[in-house]
Image 1 (cartoon, rainbow, N blue to C red):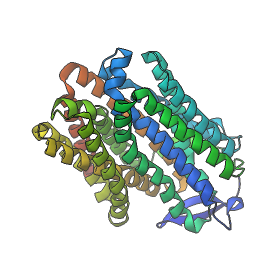
Image 2 (image 1 turned 90 degrees about the horizontal axis):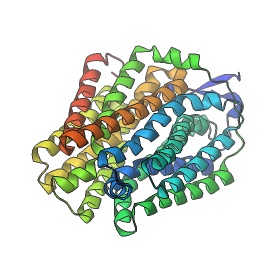
Image 3 (image 1 turned 120 degrees about the horizontal axis):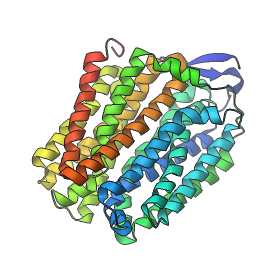
Length: 404
């Protein structure tokens, strides 16, 4: 094990290897990580905007097609905490290049899928890439820049999420209407190719500096505040994806919007998420407990508005945009919560966070699909509201003084 130095991220201790301290930041490599996150999140979110034509083409129900999200989430949940252990002796540059290559292969296979099993196989490969890349990106970013500019580096990496949130759903819906849903997946593959080229050109050699283990995961999982954070993620993410996976079907059936207006509403969701990301960080610096409470609470309010006044196109558009704003604040809020809950075990906490998030996506998509197929699309939004409201209540009741 290398000697460990302590840096700070907004007053939060983080671990950094002395041997990896760089005099000059490698911004090109940091941007390559942001591109990787952008490509992975884009590919992950595509099924939500392609659900109707995809289901029709493959001859399956929309609820069944939604399990393309489930497959990615389940495998991502497994890959997130285990990737660093499985690849513990492999240069991190090679690992990240391999994960980006998986993104490309997955997108091409999804674009050429001829049946549900073939589509699910493609999404399984995406889950490996998604979970592995997400769980290791922060640790790699720490090795690419000096400690004093690490917060700036992470903001660049997370910009990939914000841009993908804005672009993936509306562009996917529009492209599927003009050229078909398969073209949308080919565009995701093209993004992966660009990312691979940039990573190949900018990422330096990054030999492993420590040996990860399952014991570290078990130790951090015993932290009471980590448990609260994981519960919030489980409820919020499952509630979000139970509803958002079927948002296009809701908009087409309840306020009866055409594809152009559906694309505009999804764009509003993405723009809301972009600004919500920054708002979540701003609020978390001042009151972390408020940030982690208000984000799921606003999703619950938006879901209630859709249920009560969803027949109004205006109300639906505002509610979906507010939902996007709220969900955009969730990642930065819960990541800050987890790091402050376990500052000396941030990498293990991050792995558990990603794993729980992917499990929540799977649970939300499965339960949402069952509700859509058996009780109608509105029932999925009822679950979304209930789950996210419980998440907000959990923070108020069990958050304690952790975020004061």
